[in-house]
Image (cartoon, rainbow, N blue to C red; front, side, top):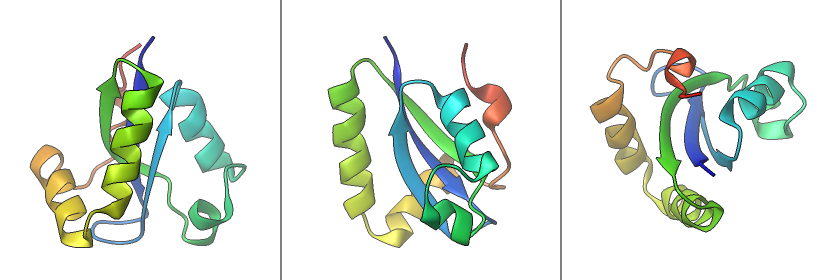
Length: 95
């Protein structure tokens, strides 16, 4: 079963949120509905700007924890390499 690590943003180079989920579509709906936590609600963080697919939940959680410890500039570089316009890429989530 696949697991995702993802990054949400409220605007280019704005507030970001890093998380992991088994079903990224459902988790994204929770963020957008405001039922997922105070950080995403407080800063209106709802745009999916980056995601990775992992084979196991342990791999995804490990990657999520590593990304959360990264410097902000490294996180922005990761996003910019995959999505330089910081556009919403939720349509690219595989089924």
